[in-house]
Image (tube, rainbow, N blue to C red; front, side, top):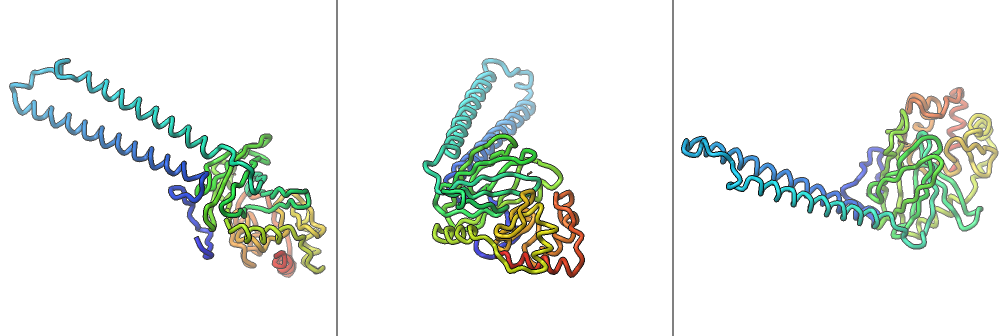
Length: 321
Ligand code: CUA
């Protein structure tokens, strides 16, 4: 998982990269092997049964013999029942142990995130030691490698479910309550995630990305995010405040809306609209001029900007580094 980022990035869930996900992968493969073993055993027994019956038919002497107690028919049922109970109880015990391993508090978190599911994007609040160390971003989550990260999940409107399969299991984001989960990335990379609770028409376009970097790189990123954005006054900035500022925040400017994603450091993100559009000048223009064409049902309305105005707004957004 290098620098060549792509929107078509696959989600990996059979290969995991952290202690909050690895036990789940083990369980997944274990239960898969068990299921395959059951299928194999049953298949062999059924085929053997058919074969024995055919053999009997082909020898008229045995044709009229019933499968009696003497032949041990009931014994097979007891053996099957015993094996099934052992397998199911073992699976249950393993599952409970995995749930405990991935859900247990991992000591003092190195980072606490408050993540809120919205229709259809993720709000990510980085909780600092003091309020002025706290900032908000969207959809693209940065974490330091090798450190436990505590995630407090909430839903803003309906129930969503937060899932970064390579790093942790699914946890629901429910309005009115806070669910806790942990994630930890053992190696640097970008890990794709997805909302996994049907939450409305654009549920499928509700991706999340976790970028894991060595702690020093992460701290540099965090310091950059803490800066306010103060681009010089421009027609684009003025237009943005008037047309977009009621829904979006750019810290350090007059735009302070909290309905949509915080755009303070928009240019530090790879995608727009929760992984729907690449964050390029063309992607931005297309998204702003007609969000409903790219993500039908999205809460963002068309802003009714003229061509030149759109160019000015995009030029301003491109300065939000
Ligand atoms: Cu949010 Cu599905």
